[in-house]
Length: 565
Image (cartoon, rainbow, N blue to C red; front, top):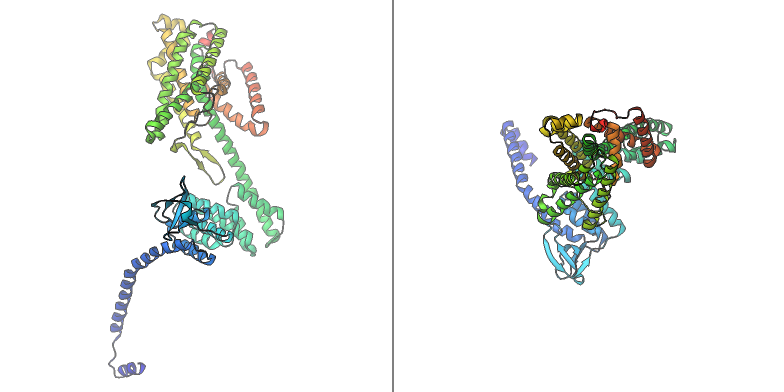
């Protein structure tokens, strides 16, 4: 052949450069078309191999099982997660009659069957018809690694993060290629950082290169969590052991100091959040009492039971929704808020019209009467609902938490209560400042006799004021049902703290109630780590008594009926 081409070229009859370029382009396009034509066929062939590989998972040969696990993992198809998890959990069976493989769940008659790849229902079978796919500890370990690897490359960011955290704790050397591949593809910054943390931990634990270990410690020093802190503490405690010796230990000490400093800051931030959260709960519980105690001068010991009634109203609303309108459960709290306000408000108006209006100007009798009312309400609730706690569900939008790498978690239900308490306070301020009822309430507060002489029906104002305060307490019960047990004793947990907030902030002053609730919540949470919960409350109570000696009318004094008498 070479001689032929040599003769052609020697005779000057060979093809020119442009001819060979044309031939090259034609061949190039031809192979591209061929590859494009066979790509779908290759994909189809791979998809067609998946059932055979899944069937191979039940093979008695451990080598074939391992081969099938590796091939299914390499496919990267999310549908293979189900059969792999079923094999790991002991739920993968073959049917003796036809040799097909199924994912099983136990039933009264034997097993319910589900297709391992499509998830389609396959009827049921008695246990004698099925043979379990058995695995050894070595296969079990391989399965865990395969599932972790697929989670690391899967579409769910939460699962990828969990897989990265698991690899960080295990620090297995075989995870390095998988981690490097996942890091190259990762688009979520938060998940990427967790993967980098896991890779740095493996490099530190396994590398014999001092520079690699130093770089790993530098990477770990950029994180703020307890796991990294423990790892760096271990490095410092081991001293000069391992590659790098003293240089690695010094770098670990420096990184550890930075991590501990940031952890201290985030711990302070967590205490601040917990204090504001407790303050918002106290604000909701006390804001209704600030109205009745401030405007009317009534020491209402049944205020806690108004909170309890609001919580039980929430329970009843959710029960009705669960049984009749299950699709509306996530909106149950929005329905419960006005319902709790109306129920608690009407009970409050009934108490004021039936008992309290005959006891104005007699604070001791009022205190005893409302205390008796509280006992009656508690026993009534016990008789109707029983003495045990009732379950109030949390809507999906309030479940979970806003998490940070530092370990700080801001739960959505607490965040919702903080925002809700501020909204209630703002709405109440608008009612007091911008409505006719608010104007009459302020007039009665400042000078009851003058308001009466100006034609204001003080009796009606008293009833509506007591109903408003009780209704707001019912709204507080809706919020508290998300963070506390709904029981007949719910209100008793907050009545003392509510009075402390009102007295400390200033009787009848909404701004004072807000600052009083937040101050007591923050002080309580910052004292707890040092003094404990019980001793911390004692310190707060003593400090409040001393403060009242200095300012008897609270932080924000307001002239009102209680002061006049």
